[in-house]
Structures are given as structure tokens and as C-alpha cells.
Amino acid sequence: MEINASQTPQFRRGFRLQWEEAQNCHVILYPEGMARLNASAAEILLLVDGKRTLGDIVAELNARFPGVPDLGNDVTDFFGQAYEHKWIIFRD
Image (cartoon, rainbow, N blue to C red; front, side):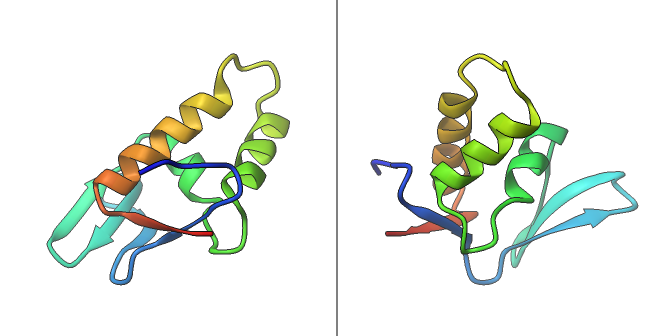
């Protein structure tokens, strides 16, 4: 799938992000289980609200973490992986 800045990511039905105290990290919960997230993945996915576009999310992360080289490409790559794992879908 070709991902662009105007698309809006949202969690697939049945998938949700939450803090898991027992794991001491954020996780994606889904019907078949859960996936533990590192801090970077959690920072990105905490911005997924079904309203912000990919471009909005990248802009917010650039504001929070100025000067990080290739941040936009890294975030877009991450969303590609999240899509492949079927955690999220994109709306145009």
C-alpha cells in the first residue's frame, strides 16, 4: 500500500492501544492476543485518534522532537509496518 501524508490512520476494529501495568509498557490488544510496544512506537500510536492525518502526526512529532533526522520517513515506515501487522487502517 502507498501511504501519503493526507491519509488518516485509525485502529482496526477490535484493536486498541493501552498501558499494560503488568508489562510496564503500552501494548496493542487485539482478539488473538497482544503486541508489546517500545517507547517510540507508543509515542507514535498515542497520536492515532482517527482525526489526525499522517502529516499531522509527523508535524506533532517534529515539534516534540526537533532535529531528529529522517523522523518523517521513520514514522511513515512505522505506519507501513503497523498496516502490515493489521493494527491500523487508513482513510483518505
